[in-house]
Amino acid sequence: MQENNIIAAISTPPGIGGIATIRLSGNGCIGLTDTVFRSVSEKKLTDQKANTIHFGSIMENDSVMDEVLVSIFKAPHSFTGEDVIEISCHGSLYIQQNILRLLISKGATLAQPGEFTQRAFLNGKMDLSQAESVADLIASSSAATHRLAMNQMRGGFSNKLMELRTELLNFTSLIELELDFSEEDVEFANRERLMETAYDIAQHIEKLAESFSLGNAVKNGIPVAIIGETNAGKSTLLNLLLHEEKAIVSDIHGTTRDVIEDTINIQGLTFRLIDTAGIRDTTDEIESIGIERTFQKIEQASIVLWIIDSATEEAHINELAEKILPRIASHQKLIAVFNKVDVVGCGVVMDKKRTILQEEISERIFISAKYEEGIADLQNRLIKAANVPEISEQDIIVTNMRHYEALEKALAAIRRVSDGLDLQISGDFLSQDIRECIHYLGEITGQISTDEILGNIFGKFCIGK
Image (cartoon, rainbow, N blue to C red; front, side, top):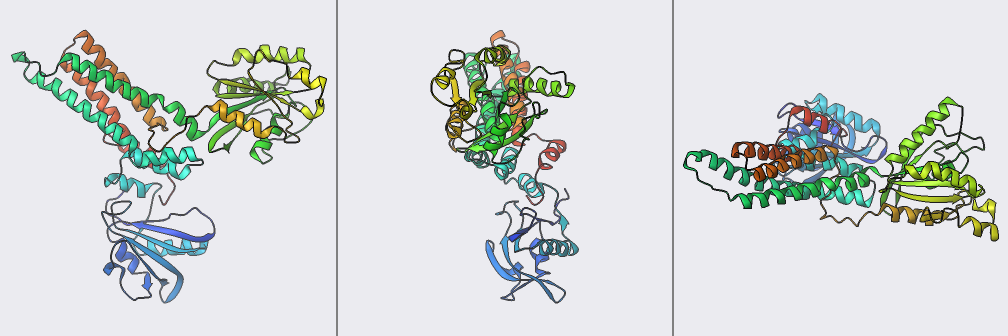
């Protein structure tokens, strides 16, 4: 990124719409806009106050390109911390591209992905974790992901890390002060108190790290593996839940040979549905690979939906249970979904079916994917199985893998400090581990950063943000 240059980009999603927004940032961007904008008041934008909106036309030579609204934001009170202009024009692709072309011809540079947010970070408008939350907020697809992103963007996570870093800095300053006066055998820090401090910091870091399993599930979707024999109705159920023909449905056995994934939102919670190849004995090499992937997906899922054709004989279901149940871990939730109840019918036969696997599986449900019977109940069972606590905007939950890895390294470092205090090792070794912990916490907020880290983070943003 070149310093002080003016960048410009279309900030709204690509495509035709009612309006579109073109954003500029950098010293001189207001004056640059004056070269292409003619206000109805005939006043220059450079003479106007910050946080004002002006109506006029974008001009190329003496021709009107479009009638627009221009919003003015002045440094340092803007998103990027620099002078910022936002041009709201009509949403024609032709108009958007030509206004952008005109601005570039006047000296602006096309912004790189995430460059506006990167400037906000470099100008101290937000730290690195807050900058990353901007991308999470844009990508939020549920109430839960929105709340988590908003909390992080507003600085909840950053403030907690700042508290921990301050404690650690006070901690290491006492240790290093003792090192400076080592010849005088002066103890500035009570070792028992330091042990308590190290333990307390470790508890806070561990709690943050442990929240990642929940945060990752909420952000990326709770993984739900849909398994069962061929033609049990797995793909029919997937299509029904997604409200689209995502998977091929056929009477031919073994139609689904590979994993199909997509997400749905149920009551504000995102689930990642994973349709798998039907489990059966087969000599087909390709189908066998698909079945092996089925068992791999079982291991990766938080919830497993075992789809069973209700017409299947009990003895055969028990045989399948011997293959499937040992693969379900204690932390996973298994729901037996008896499908095609419309085929079995009601009465004595159905009553007998309801007793199958009663002792082995506590969660069982009877549905007809074909006639959409029991689907609402199944969705409620998924919500219950997910067991996601109510998330408020005040909850600090880690959703980013980079943050989680840094927290794990920080936790290992502070635990070494505790062990060192217990073993009464010298202060220089303690200080080294404390500073390592400070370093990893600083990586999260960007107090410790490299061009490679910044490039990797902001390169994932869309252009115009």
